[in-house]
Length: 349
Image (cartoon, rainbow, N blue to C red; front, side, top):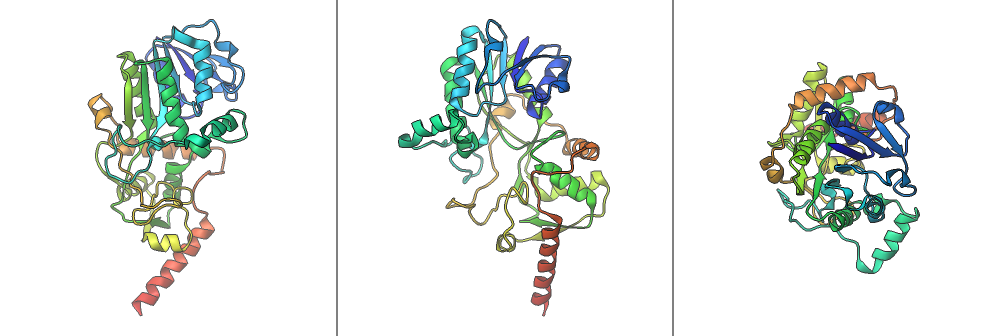
């Protein structure tokens, strides 16, 4: 197939390119050209879906894979230049489209986020003109992007509502934080229950499944995360410990203790969503429980957790940059450990 990938040089896009090349497809990338050296052997068209998309004119591809559609105006620009020449469109959406994550096993027909009608026009204009980041209304804008894609390519869109993606080159630093922290060894603060379930998926597994679906011209909406069993935080960390072969000791602290000491979920403690109290601005605590039955029935499969952790660990050892986007500072972690020790001491006596 002739495949156009919008984006394609960082994380998910990179995995898609590698999978497509492995299968012998003809890949073209369209992006701003910030990482041209990543796939120097692949045709790369330079442009910006917020600006100049002229490089896409008078071209035809069998498939478009869209990894970076964040706002409806971006979808419209792509549709305007490609029109009806596209046989199949893959849109990478997100489980953030859902109104909340309160119930267990959320399926694809659960309630979606929305923007109040009286604010919609102004917000869309502000996003399009750059006065507002699309991340301010990330989930709701993804919902609108899904609808926009379906409008232009009805019945030919594969909507991927992706969960937490992990693996090498993960610039979010969520799983890499834990891999690197465990590799350092010593006492490590972990909030919540050891049995707390989490969901994540190796980016290479989603790339494999997407190409399987596209080659069969499958369309529809799918939750795509993993694994296909209930993974606990304790199992994840013990796997990190086994891969790194370190003497890490996990200090499990209850969520109230973490909250009292102003530990920020997801940013300071990646992959932690409190089970027993709501996040800021919410009325009920969220669960990490998304149903992937539909994707499993369509052939979604997974490599082992050990393989993913091992590859992330190897990538971490080769990284040149020392900055991390998420994760608690070592100083604050030491303060938490001291506070935990004092708490245990006072309860003993």
